[in-house]
Length: 256
Image (cartoon, rainbow, N blue to C red; front, side):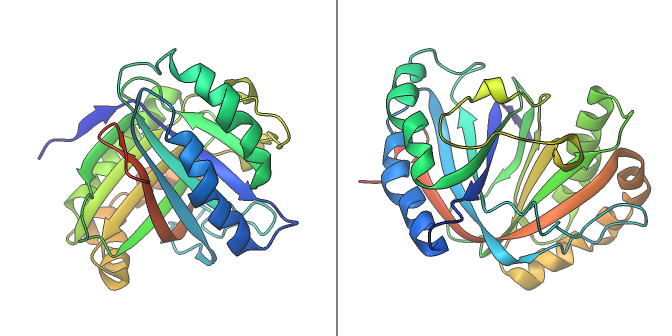
């Protein structure tokens, strides 16, 4: 099946340090999700709650970092696909009224990363109950690698290799536009994103179980991209997804 280009976004989230982790996650999947469900022009919105301990398992080639820094561990990612080629202007009032002021109730830091039209690519959507294990891989581009070359690597090299790996049931790649805090200037949360910690792409990959997922990451097709990984990437940081919460699917809220 050919891949489908989408306009997507991945918001990197750090939960509030002054709250119990379970309480902050419950607020995110509960009240905050309800607010996001009111925004128009969103085709899909799902929350990927990342493991606090199970990360850093990408089989990186020599010279590419895979260990997640202790001072920059992401707690979750909302993965969004927009219904149109551009976000709907009708979405702004609901975002300003409900979502923007509510972020401080659950998060310390929010970093919005969008791909632009066609910057996301869905190889396998992963809907249904067949996906029992997911990973999010955050990718840091090597300096002096151009935007177009990096985007092609994410989709056409690494994405294509994962798509051919046995056992992969879900695969989505996101190549981000340059980061700007002005893209999502929400109050009461941090938006600092230093260059040495910045990510330029994300990959979401799913399989039937963790053994199948690990086998896919270490498949010959993916290992064959090692030289290209070293050429294009400073780091690939893999996180296990502990929980996936579908909030909006096919343009309709899935939550009561």
